[in-house]
Image (tube, rainbow over all chains, first blue to last red; front, top):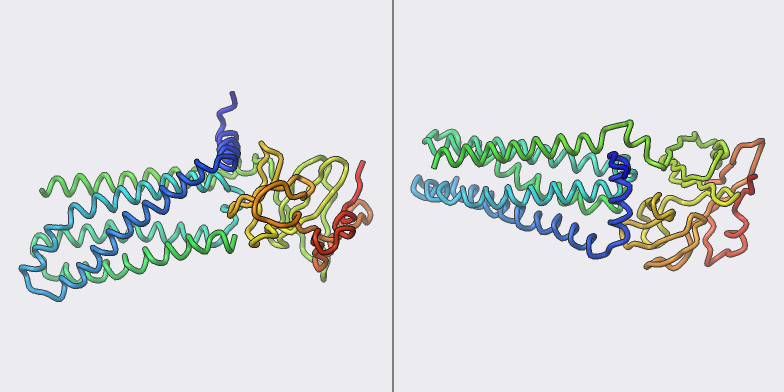
Length: 161
Length: 161
């Protein structure tokens, strides 16, 4: 049995193309991860922007509610990445040459970096660094924009390949 | 609480790095991608025409710049528009199944462009071709649709030995 990366990709592309149930499951994992992870992230970003304009008590309460959100966002991102790799392998030839695909990957990388920076700012805000809230606000705005732009690139992908 | 946060963040970054590396390995290994049974071609169009060497053996060649697919199949060479006639999404070639499939709505086509199954309502669109000194000359302005010009569509082929 040929187990080289090429033959695995060719076999997966064929399996994926011939099984509507598999296409549905992978597509659902990708969109479901986006709804769960991105939805929670956007709600948390919005709450951060509101809390940044409120008093210390409201800010502290907001930070306390953060940890549960990160878990859901991380799980959503894992689902998005795993299903995204399966989608990439199902149409590698087209996607490797697509500018929209690489734009989406760039936005995804920025989203991950921004997520890391947002967590660092959140940690500093917990430790009472006042200036951290300015960073949190900026990172939350960037997160909102990046989730929406990544979604836009994903929607555009089949139309501009 | 603090150690939990750090652990979560570390897990997040580890997962992100792991998947980024996997994506890079899948997407950027030139040896693997060039080993896929689809070859890429680049022809500089001269006016409304593009010239390609006639394929030496059966196979699929894609020129993404001119958006055409060249197929040598059963002693004939055909040139198709890269886009599916249904909603203009780039078609993919499934080497294991020996057919084309649209990734958007799963329309399926034989290597000679004949519609098999799916939402499309006609065969893959062919372009006008002729053999000139062992070069395939493609008329990029002549898009032949099987439902509007069945005889022109059927004649758009070059016989090879």
